[in-house]
Image 1 (cartoon, rainbow, N blue to C red):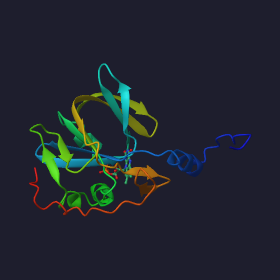
Image 2 (cartoon, helix red, strand yellow):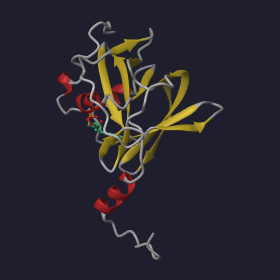
Image 3 (tube, rainbow, N blue to C red):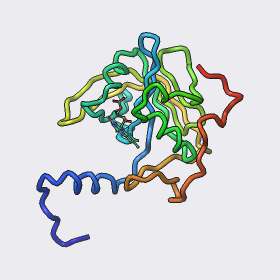
Length: 184
Ligand SMILES: Cc1cc2nc3c(=O)[nH]c(=O)nc-3n(C[C@H](O)[C@H](O)[C@H](O)COP(=O)(O)O)c2cc1C
């Protein structure tokens, strides 16, 4: 570590590069609202925000076109991507919104929340509060149901690259690699 930390001088690239040096998970927030399926990929998902009530959070860009639609859903589904789901991350964050869901193994539990099969963990949530935070909005979400697959390796986002937990580049799972699974 350098002996003297350079002061922050509104250098967004330096800020983003430093933020990116912290590994994070990658999640998809999925829900149906007014009969339409919406998805938002995020690397700002944080668990353990609160135990009572059980809260998790996400920081959402204020420019997001999807969040204003997603936030109207009664239940939101959060799926934490597995190491072999990098291609799903790219597809679900594609600017071509109509192509986001083609072949994605989506599951429903009966509410408006939707989930991705083969993920590491799943949270069914409702919007608890939103806090304006500069160019983002921090969405606090209350957890109503949850589960995890301890055998599945998570995808790690680090220095703008996707990795497995052990730093090994994971084998990529194609979006249509679960043909036997029924879409929602
Ligand atoms: C790896 C990765 C992480 C992302 N993390 C976030 C995030 O934490 N918050 C966010 O608002 N957008 C994040 N995005 C961008 C959104 O997924 C999406 O592309 C963006 O919101 C624009 O789409 P929209 O206008 O449909 O919302 C991320 C994208 C990728 C590929």
